[in-house]
Length: 322
Image (cartoon, rainbow, N blue to C red; front, side):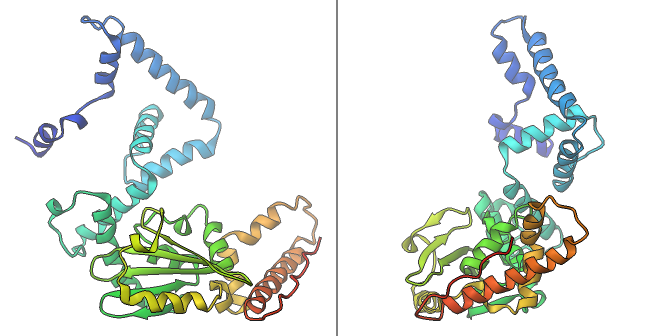
């Protein structure tokens, strides 16, 4: 008996096809309405596909998504569409990416425990991938993070670039790791203290965010599923509490640790400044000059945040130029 046949018996609830579902919807012994249901479903897909064929981005999205999952993109568009919809409904992109990373690391012999029978949840895969990432990225990104603390069990880092956030936040669903929405990272990086806790023994991760202000800091913890948690719910050793207090007491945003030039590069990397440019519909030859002005405004705002967090009397923010 093949492995697939064995798995079909082990997981009968997964051994089902669209035709099986439609035959149940038919409701007759002779499957009198099955062909009708197949045609209706197929034509509804065809209608949606035809309506979007002229939308190149829609077709490219299907191909890009299937390619990222390392699936065949040479099939007819109808087949790709059905496959795309099924995967999107059962798996979110973050989980699929975690599985692909796990598979790649395991094929390269990098997963600490290669016994696949020991894994049964997405959290198990996340932790295994996290352990691999931690070992690989410390040297690569040592200049793009502030290492707040490290011992044999824990590593605490403050990301200073989107790439460092992406790599140290690998195998999580944190919005600060979204490749298509990098502005999430920039907002947290620029408004508060964003810190990642990584367990070097288990791969467990939790993020801490403190909203910096003149009066107080709003602290929140976020697990790997990007759900907000109470401190007593996260799996952090109690001896790290003084480190948490020290980090929060600085009341400094991540962006305040960077010089102007590097802050501007992070803003570019996160498409933050380009968004301001997109809102300007005037395509005059002076666009480059306005671009430079925008970058200067970003520097002024960052300096304002850095100053105002360390001074007792708030500093009036610089006004944005029209």
